[in-house]
Length: 194
Image 1 (cartoon, rainbow, N blue to C red):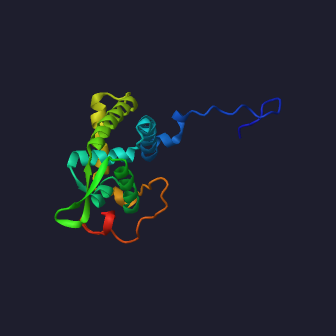
Image 2: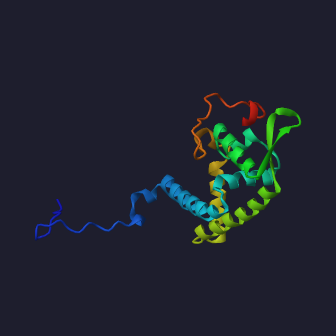
Image 3: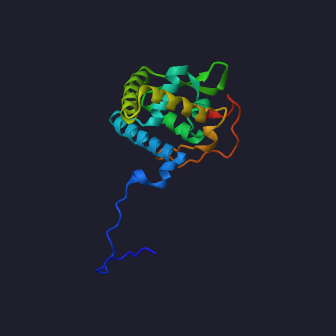
């Protein structure tokens, strides 16, 4: 057995902790979680002066790319539960970033439209997100980045994994819980939760 005391009887100096030597670095989950934490922390830090968080940018990006999207489907796409999605849309609509309009084919469904202010904010936020990605991915070559993206896309492919079933992102300051009812098919639901 190793003697933890030196000749003077005092405890030895503790070993310096080097995070690069932790056994957890051999686990995929730990490495993915730490990489995600670093990215999210830098995203939130750089987006804060604009008054938005990553969840706002995700919403703006989806609508900018696909056009008006049903509120329920939008929440499923970005892994935000139905109740929190209502609160997030209320906030973004009050800020003039999006507008809700009834679906012309089903007035129970609300489609989310991007306003001019929302599009302008998205462009600025998207540039910031790209800058942060370049910073965090700096140690990787362009080829390595493309390979990493391809592998991550395979992991999160909806055909192999449904993020909405496992992730509920709550909107800060709202105490409402997601409904216990099973999700209805696209286009179903009630009121402004659509």
